[in-house]
Image (cartoon, rainbow, N blue to C red; front, side, top):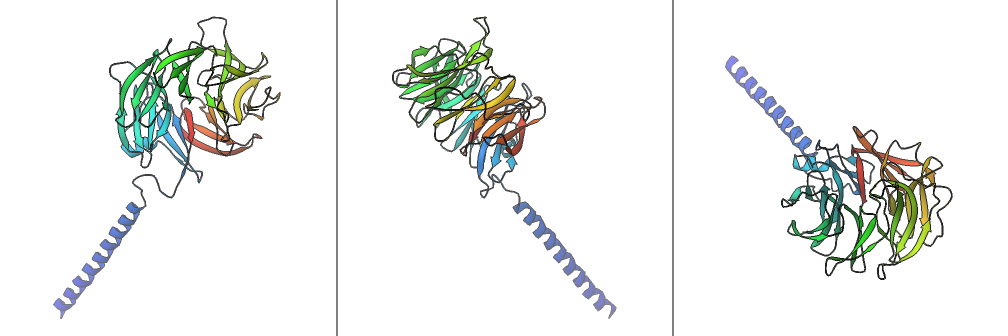
Length: 371
């Protein structure tokens, strides 16, 4: 009888242990199911933000601001278990791939937008390079501007390799725009080079000294807009001091058909003035300093002069503006680099200056691209 009771007890204990084990296994499996292998398909990206990271530290990052207001940080590292690289300057989305320029790593990282997994790393071992911006020019090619070289380079966006160079007159090419079969690119020599996309040769240089990393933008009428600046008296200086004019360029004739001059007391912020355009492409937005106040100004493309007052002053709301962008909803996104050491913020303001949202991203947020 004792043996029978002991046997029954053993069966009961084994059954209890089996149930407990299965419960633990189920919980464990359930927990793993909650961890997505890649981006959550139910969450939509509103904007991507490239953060430079600290120079030589390899702390560059790509971050995603989601439509629900959350932020997915350092998405390249999380997907690939390795750092993105050193100093992320910008990125472009081409055929479902994100092409990210890492200027101090001398490379372009290419990832799938669907899962952020690495597809390729584009290198140019024959040269010392510093990639800046990427502009797609057809279904299999893109042009890359370069900080330290007197050329741009063309990459194959299908084969992920460098195809050729386009020589220009001076080092440091920056922002680009495409219109009427031509590529417009800013030069450190205070000019805009115009390149034929059929011959891939410079056909003209325009004497418009563009502010640093300020964008070249195409409006709804096809004009290319450039923000010009004044420099120190030293002709070799590349440090802008004042914002002098907005210039509308006819891409066919290559003539400046509209110039809006600014008063001499409109100056640039520490990292220059930034320029962007709304989704309707009929209104420009820029940041300048006037009366010791840093503000966001708007300018309709058919306007005659910059408004006397900004839409709002941001100097009391932002510690260190590093870049700005206009969302499809026509709100203003400002990158705040803080002290360059800690993770920065992206703030969203309405046109009255009310802060709508704030997003903590990586170190030194630099470039925003909306979906």
